[in-house]
Image (cartoon, rainbow, N blue to C red):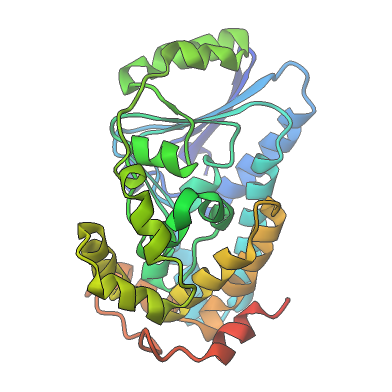
Length: 336
């Protein structure tokens, strides 16, 4: 496992580097536990003034959690494995969100799902010209989790509903506008930035390297998102999008018609329950109510089969977009 991740202290920085570039730095269960353990140690280590997390390779910071073991456990009806996995992962997400020291994440290429959970809750989130950030869980029968629901709920102009239901990828400027990132720094400057952070432990140097990434397409369409996702039911959202001439509406529909209706319906209600005063713990609690039941009662197994195992990309969901019973969603929302 230690070949998958590097944990060390360099200068004033606790360094975490993901080392699975061929697997797009997908995070294993063991990596999750190792990061939590070292963060707890560094929390009380006075010589560590700052945390820096990055990853090897150009294609991805972290493409998400390695879900193959979850799928195998689900097929064996070992649902306790998934419950423990998500419980442990969410505990790490909360630790990062509440971390008392600066936590600087460098996100090149893909940052999705579980990758968002170990980066976008940090105090300083760095993107570059290759960054592509997304929460695509609804495509495999899950919901935006790892605390991502909190970020989505805080995005401006109902944008979080669009991002959560579709799993659309954000570039650097869109990620900053949406609240998933803070600074745009060209990738060829990252080594200089990291070296400076290691020596000084001072995050103010980030402003020296930060550049204007340009206009966000999502920002330019804020009125559209505000209107299109004003309704808080999946069928009404689809109805509006079907009559819209905005090109983003057609893109959204293409994604929505492929994604899991149960997961999308739950996502809408979950985001509507989170408020500006909500904490990371509130979001993770709502997420766990779904994910802890997703293997046994939801469509997770079918979603993973279609997308990753058989790769036929033709999932057979339990319900259609306009036929998800309210009582099914209510059952998922019951406290654990």
